Length: 124
Image 1 (spheres, rainbow, N blue to C red):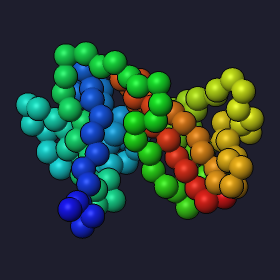
Image 2: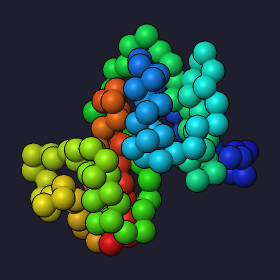
Image 3: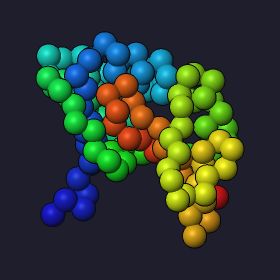
């Protein structure tokens, strides 16, 4: 039934001004709408709704991610904009914080200002 429907992504923020600055100025997303209920961004044609809430309880797993063509370039560009990449015990991550999966894909994780865990993934 939903195979042809367009998905919408959701994360939450308790500080809309800080989230807006992060998603626009750091990640480079286009702000489409700032309503009383959510910040709405265009994420390469997919709607990302950053819901405005009283408090955020971040998940201990990835909430939102992007597939990138060049992992090194993407990580270095975000680091230049102040992003810190996460490191996880028991995972072998390179100097940039990138983990290589058994299939050869590469993954790196970072958090938004509310602590939502975000990721970058590349095919290798």
